[in-house]
Amino acid sequence: MVTKHAHKNGMKDNARARAVVVLDAVLHDGRSLSAGLLLAESGMVERALVMELSYGTLRWLPRLESIAALMLHKPLRDKDRDIYYLILIGLYQLIYMRVPPYAVVDETVAVSRGLGKAWASGLVNSMLRNFQRKRQAIESSLSEDVDATYAHPVWLRKAIEQAWPDDWVSIVTVNQMRPPMVLRVNLTRQSRQDYLRQLKELGLAAIPHAHVGSAVVLEQPVDVSQLPGFDSGCVSVQDAAAQLAPTLLDLKPGLRVLDACAAPGGKTGHLFEIEPSLDVVALDIDSGRLQRVAENLQRLDYIAKLVCGDAVDTTSWWDGELFDRVLLDAPCSATGVIRRHPDIKYLRKPDDITALMKTQVLIIQSLWPLLKPGGRLVYATCSILPQENNVHLAQFISTHEDAVEIKIDAEWGRAMSVGRQILNGSYQESSESMDGFFYACLVKQS
Figure (cartoon, rainbow, N blue to C red):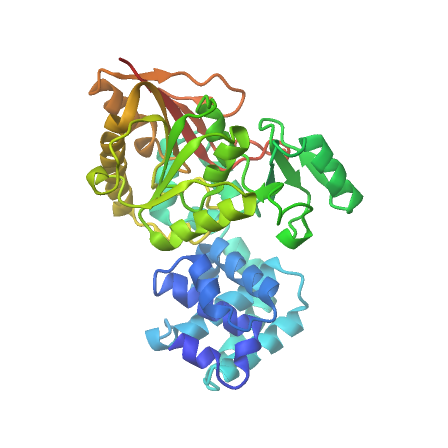
């Protein structure tokens, strides 16, 4: 319904109408933000604006909805949710963007007509103008509303607060910030310093990451087409925290490595950048996402054996040859990367955490027998919830006599009962900024 109306009366090229389509895909259909953008971007002209409106509105959704609730006399019907999303988009522009208020009102009202709902133009106009007049009073009335202030669903904010009572405010605050664009320099082809010099020559300001030797932090995000050497595999886009994974595997020439849950392939490529002679099996359950691994490896000019299969059902794909190393980037709540994917706040539900924990347990129990005696398994998640990380790994170690933890000695993150946890609110300096990640190293005793 929303998609159909967004393409009426010339609206298909209107960024605000496109953003309505994206919000509907995420909030009504339960699609990811990236999938919503794909749905909306056919022939898209103002992609940057569509992304700004979509990402921004989702970042601040609970606050925007609280404001809308104060001004709406009664909730809009479900069939008019496109108008509701349009109002939220209008409020986002008035509060967080440097668009002249008159332009926000005029453009948003015009979209309501273009969506085939001329009756709503008066409602949209009055709500946005009322907010302009009463903004100070409205925002003051929300100053004591914790959930509107921090813009997280109640269950998620409480889960973070329970897990990190001393850190939750910084975590949710960072979740609302725009993430930096971080690059991974292929150190087999050039030094990080040389790449920083190339960026400087092109007028792209960047700094080296303080804790990750391959990472470069850009001052401003750019299209990958502007990055020197991107097409030839000299550099990739990857957060500094994710770049730590292969460095923990103690890689050596010729080792047989399983990259489990490999898509989209950033870590797979990084394995080869550390040790090009590896024998890598890249496993993922999703054939479409496995194609992303293939594309990433092709750009980097590396070859791995790509296997579409379920990490739990190893009999369906494993050839019987043990692995020297296993990198298990386990499916998780992704609560450590909300600043990059604000849709996570609405796609995740409380029951998902329990289901994900069960899957994590099944996967590590299934893959452990595939590891050689003396081999190493690195467990990774982009979650900040202990029950997905150190809690269940401690249980795994207690029930597997041949599983021994190798303590990670590092300046990044904090030591847990098992492994190290990086909190996305731990680092305020851009040279240290990292997504929320968890890592643990286990070795199999003979």
